[in-house]
Structures are given as C-alpha cells and as structure tokens.
Amino acid sequence: MSLPGRDLLAHIKNENPKLGAFLENYVLPQIQTTAGNAAVSAVGKISAPAPPESVTVVPATSDDMIQVVTNHAAAIQKGAHYIYSIADNPQFSGAMTRIEPATRAPVHFALPTFKADGTTKHDWHVAVQVQYPGSDPSPATYHGGVSPSKINLNGSASMDFTPGTGSGTAENGGQTLVGLGKAQVRLGTK
Image (tube, rainbow, N blue to C red; front, side, top):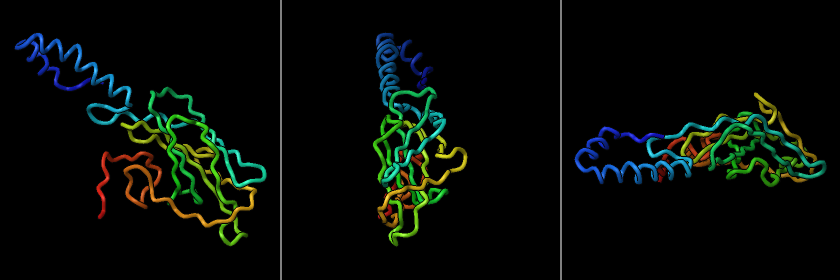
C-alpha cells in the first residue's frame, strides 16, 4: 500500500530534513504496518479476498444439525472473516448470517427439520463468503457449486424460519450476502 502525498514529503524533506526523515522512516511505515495488520487501508478499501473454492455441508444422520466445511486454499492475509449465510430459499432472501473470524469449519449449526406445522420440511441452503474488515465481501460460494443445492435434515424439530434482518452495514431487513457490509457507515432510520 502506498500513501499519497509523496510530493509533499519531498518538499518537507527539503525544508526540514529531520522531520522528513522521521515521517518517511517511522510514521509512514507504522501507518502501513497498522493498516496491513488490521486488514484495512489508510486510503480506501483493500481488494476483496478470493471466494472459497467449495462449501461442503454434512447433515447429522438423525438430528437437526449441520456441519459446514469451507475449502479456501487461496492466498489470504490475517484478519479474514468467513460469513455463513443460511436460508430456506436459494435466493437467500432473509438469510440468517453468522460471521466467524478465521474459522473455515465452525461449530455446528442447529436448524429445524420441519416447519411449525410438523409435516412440511424446510429446504435449507448455505452460502459462504470471505471478507476483510477493510474490503467488500468476496462473491458467495454455495453448497452445491454455482447454484445452491438444498439440504434435507433428518431430525424431528419443527419451527418456522424467522427471516434474518441482514448483517454489517446492510440495510435492516433488505440486503443479504453483504457480510460485514459494503458501505463504511449505515445511517439509522430513526
């Protein structure tokens, strides 16, 4: 990452060599190191990480739980968050979102097999994205590949799915698959 203002720094070094040397050798490297360690940029956004290569969902044989394992072998830097979205529709509208720092195989997800009526099964879908604090999220990778594949559970729990309200700086209730958010700030509506 290169900070702007090199021409100004050259001017400062001409006018005050000690201040210029201090800024160039101590202040600027520390800003760049801090931004790199935090997975952010001092000027704008950093590039989004590559999406995961694949997502595998393993349903329990006789329970209402799934394990999600993400295969992500691309180069990444420290600070990546994995965003797990689970929905009862392949469009992921109203998806529930769980953000996990660093882990590609989080603790199991508990999901009801049946809707509240006890007879109709849910069709669950899973998507995973990767995001740095200072980037947009990667494109989603779905269980099933390019198109989301449904996951059938074999448990007995029944409950209606309450749609999620989004995550990060996304609009409340309207946007899904945005991870920590694409906007720097979300203004409140009250």
